[in-house]
Length: 150
Length: 142
Image 1 (cartoon, rainbow over the protein chains, first blue to last red):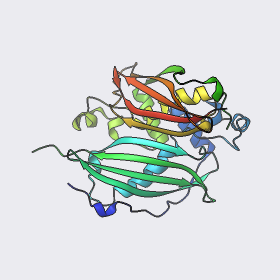
Image 2: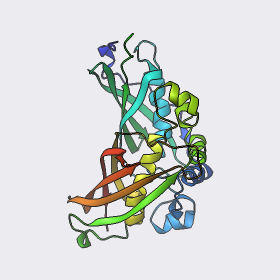
Image 3: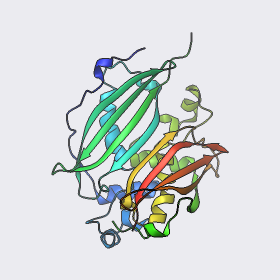
Image 4: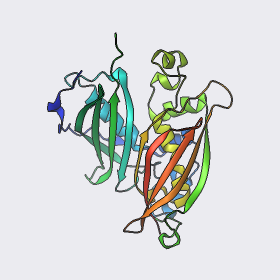
C-alpha cells in the first residue's frame, strides 16, 4: 500500500524530556557487555573531560526510537507497523549523551519511498538538551516489507 | 574528548584490534530490558518462525552497539566518536543453546579527514555472513 506522500517533511512536536540517569547508563552498558569505565565511573569520565558518566554511542536510540514510534504508528500515515524492519541507522554526535541530561527529540519524516513493493521511510530525530543545545541526531530508515501474495 | 590514539600515528589501512562478541538468548533478554525493545522476534522462537525468520534473531541495535566497541576501545574515549552509521544486511541468528552466536568485528582506517578525524570502516560477520553493511564511524583522534 502506498503511503501518504504528504507526510514528507512533516515535523512533530518535541517529546517530553527524558532524564538520563547514571544507573540507566550502567544497566545499558552491562547489557551490551561493555566495561568501559567512562560509562560507570564518574572519575574515569572526568579524566576524559566529561562532566559525568557518558552513555554508549547507541544509547540515544532508545530515546529517538520511542519518538519515531509515535510518528510511524500515526494511523493517517498508513504504515503496517507489524511488517517493519530496521534498514539503516546513523548517529551524528555533537557530544556524547551523559548522566543528568534532560533530552527532548524532534522527529521529522525526511522521505517516503516505495521500492519493489516495500515502503521505505526515513526519519530524522534531533536530540537536544534542556538548554536547547544539539546533542545528537539519529537517522533511522525503516522498511515495511510488502505483504506476501495471496 | 581525549582519544588515546594520535592522528599523526594513524595511516589509511591501519587495522584496529579485532574483537569477537558472544550473544546468547539471555544476552538478548537483558538487552531487551535495558533498551526497552521487547519485539518478540528477539526472544520468542515460536513468534520468530511465524513471521518467517529461521530462529530468534539479535536486535540490530545490539549488533550495532557491539561493533562500535572495536572503535571506542581503540580510541580510548567513546566521546571521541562524531558519527556512526550501519546498514542491517542480515540478521544475527541466535540458537537456544549455551553457545549462542558470535559476532566477529574487524575494522580499519579508511580515510584521514580534516579536524584530526579519521573514518573507520567496520566489518561484522556472524555465521559466515556479513550482518552489517556500510558500517562506518568517524572518530576525532588526539
